[in-house]
Image (cartoon, rainbow, N blue to C red; front, side, top):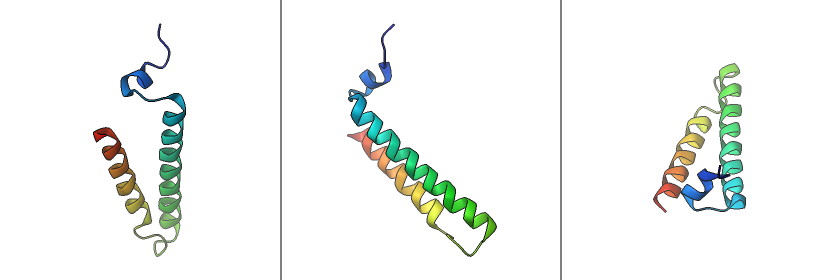
Length: 66
């Protein structure tokens, strides 16, 4: 059984994949924080969560095209 077939399919190193995955994770966590605070205080972070997710989606889609 080959290890890390996902990395071979993407043709990326473990380190590069790790960095990108951690960035995506951090951005998702940040969005979650915005939504959580907004749920409690509706006047706070009215667009931050969705804006962060849209930017992350663009980043992921652009990386797939490269």
